[in-house]
Image (tube, rainbow, N blue to C red; front, side, top):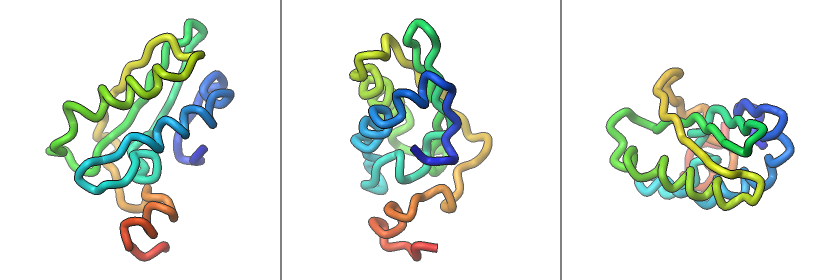
Amino acid sequence: MREDIRLNERAKVLAPQIKAKLLTVIDPELELDIYNLGLVYEININETGHCRLVMTFTETNCGCADTLPIEVADKIKEIPEVASAEVIVTYNPAWKMTRISRFGRIALRISPW
């Protein structure tokens, strides 16, 4: 899991499954997954299996702002240990291109560093 995503202990245990699900959620405008774009800031799973995921978008008027959080929640709920999920969208801190992973930079044909 990326070091810049804050995880609580329960989320750390499920990190491989969470990452696998996030890799399947594609930003339709940039055609890259939200994990490698660095759109996910925080993931917490409580004792009842409720997942709270905090994410952002590359810009405040993103065309997928209404649909992408629903898709993220649906994907996370596919993990058997997750009973429910909510996605909180924040713009603080603002997303920066430096959050794009090395793989993402290569995929988008941006200088790797």
